Every structure is written in structure tokens, then in C-alpha cells.
Image 1 (cartoon, rainbow, N blue to C red):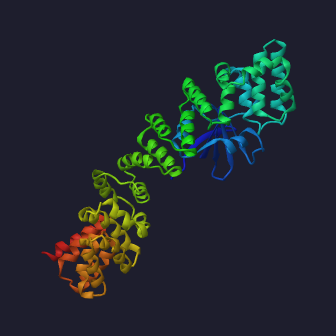
Image 2 (cartoon, one colour; image 1 turned 90 degrees about the vertical axis):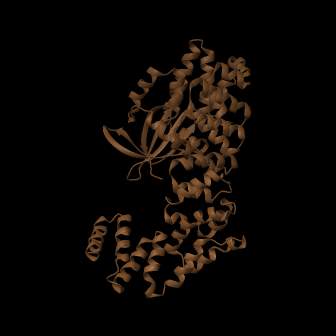
Length: 459
């Protein structure tokens, strides 16, 4: 799949980056990107808003970015969520941290500002965030804002769980009432949704915590987070309810985006329910290669109407894709046709054409064995037998060329008709075919030349 490229501005220069991965982790989102020289960049978001980005050669162990890459929810750089998140931003400008801090303070509360700056601990001075948290904590306590101070300690706990200062403070007598209150996740969500999310994301497969996260995402209109969590839950354990909820969330995505999301789910969980939902958009998408790869690698049985549509897609599928399924395609095609010889013959024909490009004829003829075992002998087999009989007969090149033409093997048919022209220079039939073939393969000049020759021959 083609990489997703986007523009950033860094040091007053515009750069083109390639999105490699998007990670969802608590209130942050992190896009890992590369440039043409394979340098790495990290773009950090608070919820759906871009905050800042850095070019770096390494990530600190146990930093926020490191924990996110280890424990977060990941989607590819070409995933619809990645592209939608980037396209949602007005600009992606990397700036220095001092002006960034002032800018963030204007738009977010003190607690959110501190939380946001913990996202950048891999790129800031070692003690800068700790000093900021401590000074803010003491200010809260001096002003008698004990609940605000306790909320900050909980954020600090999420940032640095082993820190002795936070461990001593959070368990002190002055916060005992709050500590008891924080034993119940529903209480935390009602009074401190920011910390509720930090707690619930770490244990996001717990049913109670899942419920809190979805309540939070709904109340804040965070569709991307809700969808990422649904996808993650389906990867973890497929359930019908989760899948239906995911379908509901992607209704506003366009057809290609829905298809991409369903394919991503299918690759991680080959569930029959996904197969059923995936086939219709694949048939409607025009992506014939992907459709055929899907249909040949699943056991899902399409409806008769879908099989007819599938026949049309086969003519648009790249021959190398069809040929790659030589070994397993015969039994699958038999199943798809429901043992109906007419439908089977339509399904088989494009495959045989692709096989003739690179697979020995004797192997192709043997490929029909499962059909014989089912009591089915297809008309196309007679043509293959003819090709086999005529291949070494120089006097039968015209008929051989016609057979190759029927299988869309135009290069081979050209050789046959040119040979026939040498043997029968006054016969207009090979010239007619050559003009037609060159027109089909897009060589109009050669087609016109043979057309003029035909006119001269028929005068």
C-alpha cells in the first residue's frame, strides 16, 4: 500500500514526512514518522489536538513515549484514523519548549498543562517536569486547594510511580479522605475524569474500566479514541457486540475508509462475521486484487449474485495475483461455484489465462483433477488440449494464435500470427488479428500499420 505523506514545519522549513504508526495512549496520541533519509520524528497530540513534535534518534526508557509505544493501541500509518487525525490539524509546526509552555497555559488548565508536559519527558531536561509538578503542588496546598493538590499527586503517580515524594504525600493524613474516595472508579470519574482515564486505560480490558472510558469518550466527543479502543478490544477478544458497536462508529467514514478498517480487523481476527461484512464493500470498491485475495483465502460462501459479480472482477485482476493461487485455487473455485459447471467455467477461465503465462501446460491440465473427481469436465479443457496438440505444429499456428487470443495471451498470439503471415503472405486473417491485438494492448501505431496492410491486401 502507498505510504501516507504529510507536511510539517520545523525551523521555518517545510518537510515531507511519511506516517509510520499512530499510537493511542491515555490522553495522548503519538505519530511516529520518517523522512526520506530515514530520520525519525514524533508528533505528540493531547486528545485530538497537535501539541508539538521532535526529530530524535532515541527515546528514553520509561518515558511517556516509551510507555506509549510499549503499552498503547497502535494502528498503521495508512490507517484511516492516522490520516483523519493529521488532516484535522490546521498546521503541524514544531516549536521550542519555552514558547510552547506559555501557549499551552493559555488554552488548558494547570493540571492539563502539567499532564501535557509529561508527554515530552523524553525530550526535556531530566528534572524540569518534576520541579514543575512539585512547585504547583506546594502552591495548591498553600492556597488550601487540597483536592486540586491530590489530583496533581495522582497525575504525578501516573508519571512516576516509584517517586518517594509522591508516595509519601499521597498517603499522608491530609489526603486520607480523598484516598478513600478514590477507591471507587465511579467516584473518580464523576469528580476527576482526567485521572479516571489514566487509571482505566492501564486496565482497559476490565469491563468496568471499559465502560468508564466509553462514557468519557462520548461526553468529550472523542470518536477516534472510541474507535481505537473498539478495535483494540476486538483484537484482544472478538465479540459480536463489540463488532456491531465498531460498525456503528465507522458509519460516517467513507467506503474506502470503512473497507480499510474492516480489513485491518479481519487480519487480526478471521471471524466469519467480519468476512460477511467485508465482502460487500470489497465487491463495490473496484479493488479486484484485494477482493480475489480475500475470497481465495477465506471459507466464506458468497451468494449467487455475489459470485456473478466476482466473475466480473476476475477479468480486472492482475494475472500475477491469480497465478499466485495456482496450488489452492481449484478446490476453492469448485466450492464457490457450488459445483455448477457453467459458473465454474466462468470462474476458471481467467485463472487458466494467468497460468498459461508462467506455468507448464501439463501442470495446468493436472490442475483440473478435483473437477474430474466431482464429475465435472469443462469446455475450457478442450481448448487446453488443442493448445497442447498444436504447440509443436508449425502448420497450425493460425488456430493456435486464435486460442491464445481467446485466453488474452496477446504476446503469444502475436508470435503465432506473424509466423502465419510468413507461411501465408496473402492470407488477410492473421493481419486482421494483429491489428486488433495491437489496438487492445494500446499500441495504436502498430495497429494502424497492420490496418493499412490489410487495406492493401484486399484491394
